[in-house]
Every structure is written in C-alpha cells, then in structure tokens.
Length: 383
Image (tube, rainbow, N blue to C red; front, side):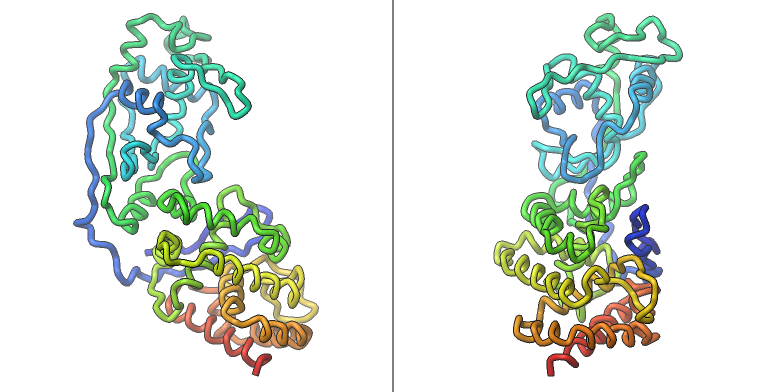
C-alpha cells in the first residue's frame, strides 16, 4: 500500500500530493527475499571502510555525518561499556562496494573515530581530515579528548572485537524486492525519500541520466527555480517524466513507487536512446515555458486566481504529452497560447480532471483520466 503523501518542499513551492491508498496490484513474491544473516565484528567493518568497500558518499543524497561529535562519542562509549549495537543492513549486490541500507550514521562514526586515525584521510582538496576525539563521555571521562590510537591497547581491542549482526541483501534479489526492503528497514534519523531509494538501487547510467536532466536549464526555468535538490525532489519530477515517457500510461498499475522504480530501471537497457529522451524532455519544457511562463504546472481555476504551488501530476502529464507531439504542432499550440491558457482554466474546472490531479492521484483511473483529458485538450489546438 502506498503512503498517501510525498515529501513537500518546506517553502510551499511544491503541492503536497495525495496518492491515495490504492493496493499494489502485483506485489512481489516474498520467496524472492534473499538476505544473509552474517555475524561479524567491528574490525571487519573497519577493514571494508579502509579499502573503501562500503559506500559512505554515494549519490543517494542521504548525508553521512549528521550526528554531532557528542553523539558519535556516546556511540563509541556504548561499545566500550559493552552495550550491544543494533543490526546493520547492507545491499551486497556488488561485494566490492556494499551500500548501507540502515546504519549509516553509526558506520560514519566508526569511520571518523577509527579509520581516519589509523590511516590518513584527505578531502577533495588534499587537506588531511583530522580523526574524531571523544567528548562529553558519561562514564569513561578519563578518555575525554582521546583519539582511537590514544586509547589503551585493551580498549582498542575491545572496540575492534565487538560483535555485531550484519544482514546482507544478496546479489540477484529483484529490484522491486530490494526497494521494499529499503523502505521497510531504513530507520535512521534521516529516513530516505522514495526517490533516494530509487537512486540508490539504480546507480550508473540511470542515476547519472536522471541527475543530468534535473540540472537542465530548461527544467529549472520551467519550474521557476522552485524545486530544491536537497532530498532529490527535482529528480523525482524527472523520474516521473521518464517513467511515463518510456512506459505507456495505459499499462500503469499501482503502486506509483513501484512504477517509477521500473521506469528508472528501464534506463539500464542499452537500446534506450538517451539523447532522444533528453531532447524530447527539453522540447516539452520549452513549450511549457512559451505557453505558461512562470505559471507552468500550477492549477488555475480563474484568470485572477492566486498563483498556486507546482503540481507533480500536471508536470508529469504535460511534459510527457508535449514530448510526444512534433515540433510543428507544438508551434501551432504556442501561437494560440492565450487561448490555450484560457482553455486550461476550463480544464481545471472539470471536476473529473481536478480530482485526477488532486485526490488519490496514484490510482489507475486517475492516471488514465488526466492523460486522456490533456491529450484531448492539446489536440484541440492542433487539429
């Protein structure tokens, strides 16, 4: 079952979306869950960190080092006084580069305290990164200000030999299964947004291409520079375009998260013409700019109506629909832009269309309704 809302920009520039509670039509086969339980030690995690075999700085946009130095120090103190740590979860699809599903801040603390002390780490400018020093300890106050290598050898050994429980998602686990695991397991202080999970599962060509499109000047201008990239909100918009561009809306089945993950994963196919997708995306955005100006993708019930936030479903349906129209036809639409804007107001006053872009927008009938009505709306200015 889909969550009934998605992340909304704090500045109110993106309309909060009501996805509804439509059931997943084809849930994944639970027998395909393949997670290995692996008893381990902190020393083994440190070894992977030393050789950069755990991804700390991936393009998830889920930031490491969110914990304060005090909170990291309390974690180290907990290990020293033998308080068991919660389990760690990794995506082990690539055994040479594990992705962290749950436990990022704890692993970042181990990296800051141990790895940065035993091997010299440098930032991108080549400046050495100082190791973390313990501060504000509650019980082991004698070790305040100490780095890992300044601790007595028996305490160093106690940390490294501490047993932990690691769960590894094995190679071959289907993407839709991994996506569900990410959503269910991720419990950190900064829970991943759906697009961040999709990005994590589709590294390489898909993640780079989505990022590229989100950085296009046409995208920023069409959305009036209102969409922040902090939690991949911009890439969520792009992924909607790509998914409905590559997969016919008539074949859409809930839930939306799964559909968008399939759309992003489809970019892995070498037969996909990325240049054409980019060109069609830019073409549709330029058309929206030419017609609507800075009011693109915003509901409007009256010419004098106040300017509303950007609506994701309007972005999705307008960009995809315009991307399928040839340039000559788009030129004819742009020539009639005043009439188009007036007609768009009438379209927004259509109760069926309004509901399709406002309430339970992830339901199959709502998706069909908005695409069919926008197609008729645009065709009326071409024929």
